[in-house]
Amino acid sequence: MKDFSFSKDLILWYEENKRSLPWRETTDPYKIWVSEIMLQQTRVEAVKPYYMRFLAALPTVQDLANADPELLNKLWQGLGYYSRVRNMQKAAKECLALYQGKMPGTYKELQSLPGIGEYTAGAIASFAYKEPVPAVDGNVLRVISRYLALELPVDTPRAKEQIAGFVRSVLPKDRPDVFNQALIELGATLCGPDRAARCGGCPLLGHCQAFEKEMTELLPKRTPKKPKRVEERTPLLLVTEDGKMALCKRPEKGLLQGLWEIPALEGKATPEEVGRVLKSWGCLPVPGEIQPLPHARHVFSHVVWEMDGYRVLVETTGGLSFFTKEERKALAVPSAFKAYFRYLF
Ligand code: ADE
Image 1 (spheres, rainbow, N blue to C red):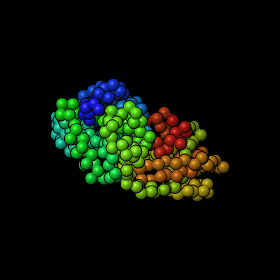
Image 2: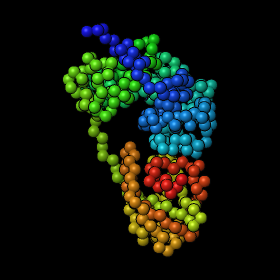
Image 3: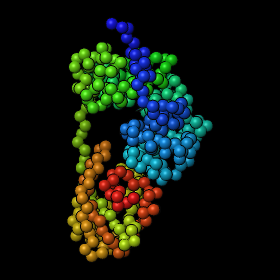
Image 4: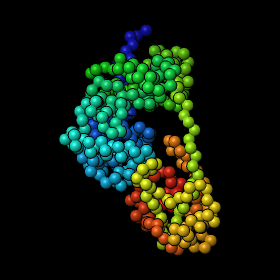
């Protein structure tokens, strides 16, 4: 059997098979940071246009630090988990205050910034500065838990430390950037999350414990999640004869903070209840113009919204703010309201 070296064989495979991705063409730590934050919860193909647009609007750390939060939300609209971009701005402000407007130059300092955890710090430090540190994301947890046939749930600190320890032990000091990208790439492609790993082309084949034990489809293990809380809501698409629509800003804390939304009642309301509430807002419906809309659902990380809304033609606007179609395009309305986007934009 030919000599096997985890890192050499993996890197050889990567160099022949890697996808060309925009964030792999740069060593600018800011650009790498933006990509890694976006990639945390979103697929590569979906991230690409967001990444290009974000960097075109905010090409430097200083631009991010000084950006209007409304613009940030608009650039993030559709990516979800908006706290990510808020934390990025906080971190960018720290870079201005503490690091002369640049990203700090070490893993340790990077990790001290808001929203930059072990993984992101490892990715930036290794890709941008070639610091020999692991970058263990979900892809790497999957590859290594399979390679070692590790049955501990990978979301536990013990498993994460064991996996990071293994990565440290095989990480080549002279090529940590290529090595970390290669591990991520293997987990994103052949050793993917769809359970049916495509082991045929894997550079680790013959050394992978999960393959040996026919366990690839059983790994990685995770601790079972708590069921999500279900909330019923009644969104109200309040429109005027001249095509304006009501939107309100969510409070500056909690779910979807500071984003724009369709006004909504908690719970599932009947047309009569809707009529009464609108009257109390001074927003009077045209008689007979409270039309039910199809059911819609949005799944957040911990909550599910079950929405049964109405479209209501109103003749007075009361205390609510109404916006033209053009004005609505500039506002960040989260994807939770995607079912209503065809009315909004
Ligand atoms: N997922 C997380 N980081 C990534 C990267 N640098 N390339 C591809 N997919 C990724």
